[in-house]
Figure 1 (cartoon, rainbow, N blue to C red):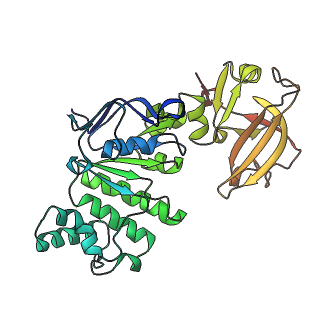
Figure 2 (figure 1 turned 90 degrees about the horizontal axis):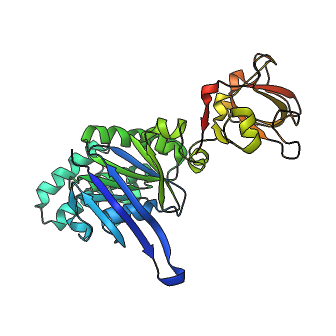
Figure 3 (figure 1 turned 30 degrees about the horizontal axis):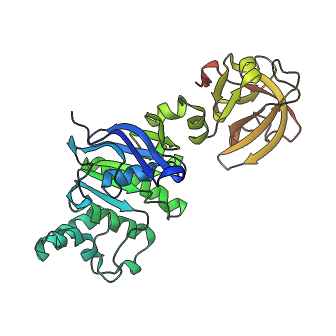
Length: 347
């Protein structure tokens, strides 16, 4: 089966000579048809540059971009079977919502009656029936986001590119739009390429995630694989909270030179069967869970006294006190437990 998007050794360098910046470095990637694929990474990691090369807004300095198996590396944006939804929505304030949505069809000289019918159909699809006569300034941020989405879908692209489209929304609305976007993508069967630096968006919406760092793909996999089995230290730290152990402490506690332990896999208990012991250095309440940071006892095997190791445990708030009715107190001695399968060795 032909991939919806293929990147074949794609690189992009801005500038020349000593001041040149290699924004994307020899990336190979295949995104399947009908897949919700997310590029996740910090600001400046290269993910948006990749999206712009797929959309045709930025030309690669090396490699090829293929859409549906066809080489479009030098094809202009208007001739590619893709559309883009930007974070700032880019709606025309002087146009009605209906005309905003229908704008791509107007450019293609589709008859007014036909494009208005299709625009109203798309507005209904994104749960905005009856707003066609309004102006963008009369809608909320979430509604304007849906309008931008409807406009991008009206020309029936093979691939929809979404460049951090939910970044300007508040938390509750962002979570609502995450569910709506995923449901819409399943209904339409269109390939979605979603760009974000928000790990929770990536984990909750994606079929697969590509983790970007310094212009390179560090790992590609399902949300579960990326979270439970990160390929590198960077992925372990960037996707979710993580205890990353190295050196003597790692070897003493895990048997590996470098390993990761997710905080939610740690529990508190008695001395019997404890993996480590220490003193509570910090307690933070987050509602659903309580974060407890523990400095391991200096006498713990393999843990140098001059470099105490701190482990973070995220305990469900109802169980934070482990039956004692209260979370551990600062300075309290505690014993940490985890299953051996919870430890993941890092390369």
